[in-house]
Image (cartoon, rainbow, N blue to C red; front, side):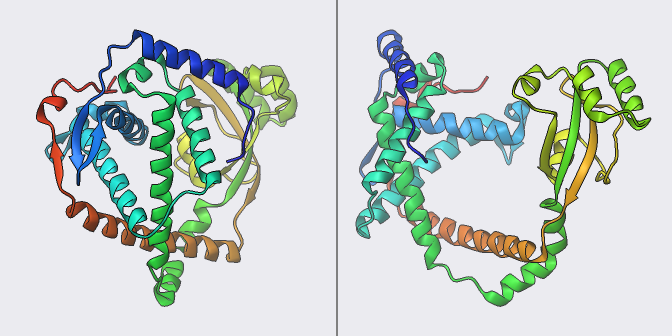
Length: 323
């Protein structure tokens, strides 16, 4: 991550941290010990927040009403947050045993990440975490060290060339479609009637760029000199606009409703990846898949050997980030 000037951001962060320190009733305490290493409530709350954000992003806001093999969404998020801390502790122990440490540049990068993370939080979220900038920097260093250990373990894993070739043969077509890039011109309007009018005019041959200037309601795009054009991977395009079939070159769509707005799309170009690119994508995907499974197995062994002591009273009435 490149180092940036953060004067205004630092002022904002200072203000938020001051509010957290002066107005919060948060009381930090030890909630568990993993092989004697104390886990603080503030540390757990940070991981609970990130686990919650990841969970909701993947499964949607109604995730809390779902059943996960007998666990509620809230229970699963809490379990994930604590297991993540266990993984971080396991990585710390491995790093110590193998003389792995962060460079000064990596520490600086971790501190920048901590600053950016804190700046994105609301006052309420900060109050729930009870974490200050120094604590967050330490947590980010630990997280960064985990990634270094992860990469170190991944390098231990050898990938079978024949199996990789088989993976390529079986997945080449799917990867080619997934990574095909579609360049589209778009017009966004606020109501269905106008959208139908614009779509009909475009299909009748009227200039799409002129229609964009006349009808498009995305003022930010126009202010930034945009023309509504974007390039997306095939699958992402289909998922974003709810398309059941791939668009063809030159195709102009009927109005497509997305979150209350209506879009008309025109396909300008379709660019599939080359055979060489598809092969590289397949090799990278397979290598990552195999190495990920290997690292997870190694970490699971380390976690299984941990001695975990939770402080029962510390877990009573623990706050959540569930809306």
